[in-house]
Structures are given as structure tokens and as C-alpha cells.
Amino acid sequence: MPLLPPKLQKRLAPPLKIGSLEVKSRVLQSPLSGVTDLVFRRLVRRYAPNSMMYTEMVNAAGLCHVKQLPRIMEVDPNEKPISIQLFDCRPDFMAEAAQMAVREGADTVDINMGCPVNKITKKGGGSSLLRDPKTAEAIVRTVVQAVSVPVTVKTRIGWSDREITILDFAKRLEDAGAQMLTLHARTREQGYHGSAQWEWIARVKEVLSIPVIANGDIFSVEAAVNCLEQTGADGVMCSRGTLGYPFLVGEIDYFLKTGQAIAPPTAVERLECAKEHLQGLWSYKGDRGIRQARKHMAWYAKGFTGAGELRDRLSRIETVVQGVELLDGVIARIQAGTFPEMALSCLM
Image (cartoon, rainbow, N blue to C red):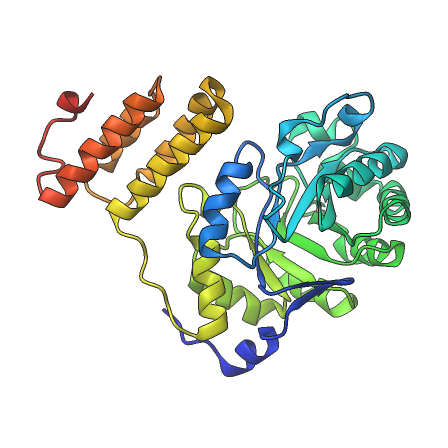
């Protein structure tokens, strides 16, 4: 574990200011499709109570004629600070959706301009806006005029290594009224492959006056510290590092505030968290929650002997009872020191 440089700790000590909003943490939980629902956010917030959380991204166009908001926009009145992320390429739809998000309780409205998925980019949303800066600018300007809360943007460094346009793009967004920029330091072409190009975060930080949040390859406390030192960013956003590990945001936040490391969770603690996550998804979503839980359970089952076999079993559970019994059985055997010698077949 690296030492926390005193200059870095001092620089990050004040609250993160996003327009008129003060956030008492420099570590944010990224919006993740199919992941950052109410159940997951509650787990992350247990260890990082002051961090900004984000909903899964919401299709603004899909909100135009609904009588009831989709469940992915649901927020707990007590979960503060919270941001609702929206995507689309039409400023008027985005403005209307942003007003709905504020009524739902959003402390900020985040605009997705970074999603690389084809079904999003083919319709002009997500990272395709990197190739259409005029529309991106119009979206930000229109949404800013429509709501009273800060408007932020999450984007990438460019479409490809041959088309890195982030310096001009980021400045346009700031001039349009964006009050924070989160930069995933990969191109759209990279997707989630290769290394994040943190040097571009540093370059963007030099040209903007609004907060710049670093995103990409933040899988540990050490990575977060290195990124913040190298880029001068105002904070970090954790994404894939929290899959099956909702402890990460809190671990980084604690280290940045105190210079002390929190002991990582044991295998038993991770599996107890997995069980709580499973039960929460079942209570919140029923059978659909169980189907969604399979991927989460597979992410939790890592980092200890016998995890591979357990992961295979958890990815095929059909009921909450089945999953809980499997997890309880493995937890008991880990505590007794008899796992994985005990055959998994007898646990189902």
C-alpha cells in the first residue's frame, strides 16, 4: 500500500464542489447498466456514506409518454448525494427527462456521452456525441436551462486513437454550462480493453476550471492514488472494480481522508455481502432479481481457494433459497477450515 502524499491529502481535503452542491467525498460510484440499482447502491453507501452514487443510465426518449417512471430511476429519499444519469441525442427530450429526474430526487443530472455500446451509439447517444460536438453542446445548454440542480457529463477521450477530440469537446461542454466532467480515459474504439490513457485526464484538467473526475482502471486504493497524482484530477470514479466488491469506494475514500488502509474483507465477509445482495435483489425485484443476481454472485466468488467451483454453482441458481443455502454452506465450511475439500455437490 503506498503512502498518501501530504500534498495530495491536503488538496483533496475540502469538499468536492459541483456547482452549488458540496460532496464530502472525492470518490464516486460510477453508473453501471444492470448493476447500480437501489440494492447495490445501498451496499456501496454502507462503506462510503458521503460518496456520490449514480443510477443506471436512463433512456430520456423512453420517458416522454410514461405514466410511471421506470424503476431504474427510483431513489431512496435518504440516499444522498444521488445523481440520475440520462442519455439521448435530442435536447428537448433530455431537458424534459432531467426535470423528471429532479422531481424524483436527483441532486445532479448526469449526461452520458461515453457509452460505447452499438445500440446506443447508432441512435446518436453515448460516445457518438464525441463526433457531434454541436449537438452535445446543445444538450448541455438546454438541460442546464431546464433544471436548478448542477448538470454534469461523463464521456471518453475520443472515438478512436486517430480521433481524440476531448480537449475541444470538454471545453465546449464547460462553456455550455456543465459543472463537472467525468472522463473515462479510453476511446470508444477501446471499449473496456487496453489501458486507460490517464495522460489525457491531466491534459483536460489543464484546460477546464470545473472539477474533472478520473475514471478508468481504478481497481484499487493504489491505482486511485497513482491516478490522482499523475492527473491532478479532483476525484476518482470507480466502475468495474466494484463488481462483486462494493467495498472499494469506501476503501479509497477512507485512505484519501486518513492515509490509513482498511483491512480488506475476508472471504466470509464477501460471501455474507453476496448473500445480503441476493436477498435484497429478491425482495426488490422478485424472480427477475434472482436472474440478475447470478452475475453478481459470480463476481463475489473470487479470491479464495475453491471460488471457481462456487462461482459456477452460483451462476445457475434458480431461487433465493437455493442461493442462500449454498452461500451459508460454503461460509460454514470456510470457517471450519473444510472448504473446498467438502464436495460442492452435497451443498445443493
